[in-house]
Image (tube, rainbow, N blue to C red; front, side):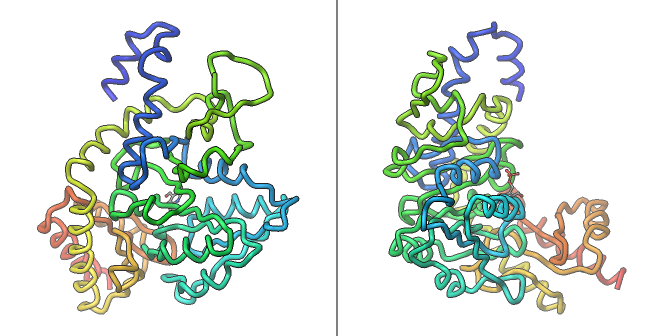
Length: 350
Ligand SMILES: Cc1ncc(COP(=O)(O)O)c(C=O)c1O
């Protein structure tokens, strides 16, 4: 952020675009692509994940296409459901794969919903609510057999779980940088499968998506050939500055190492919780889980405050309880201490 202030202090009116600003989106996009296992040129930064989804949606025409079904899940982030609800006014038929326990959406429920009328399967890779992780490969395989596209919201998995977008063959990934990527707010991203990019013309657009933006020419729109065709207007430059150091640290530590540490710790945390008879609202199977563990407590917000007073920082979600998310910078001792403090507090307030 100090580098941003310095640039802001010293630039003149036009030289910011001429020097670093223009390339910065591409640079950040390529660094994020590395984390997502995508090729350079596969990620366009976005204002946030909600806009990233809207950008993808704006490439579809649900009203005139018979292929107008969208498969989502009940464990997706609420933004997604609001955005899809709005699309029903434009002809989208939305099928929401259910969950009996609020923790898992059984894979068959997702796969059975995919048919020849499906345009897009759009799901959280890891749920913000339960940390449930869907089987990306199985979903992409079934969707592609039926000619449907797949969009995964990887906000809760990128940076904590190792995956390769290119190996999955997934069409779109969306997310943002303030969670496991250790960046600042207002830097979302959109990955688009490289061989798909030029087929798409997002109606949610702007001058930055034009092939010659500094010509300032009026319509007709000429989309850029690169992933920049999925941009809109001026990016949030401070947000771009805020994400680079986090990405660099993640690259140095390495996502495979982060995943291994995370899985070891979350396994230990779940054992600790189950031994005490607590209700764990995340999947028991490590292969069905992200980096968070949800533990039910009666009054989540009050417990979050009590824990914060003891310097244990977690959050909570309605109906689910605490969401505890150790990252690579935590030590085993910290994780153990946090769980012991939680045990004390649960006992005190039983
Ligand atoms: C899985 C998931 N998707 C989307 C969002 C919302 O992202 P944004 O605020 O960038 O639209 C969140 C935020 O917590 C999230 O957890």
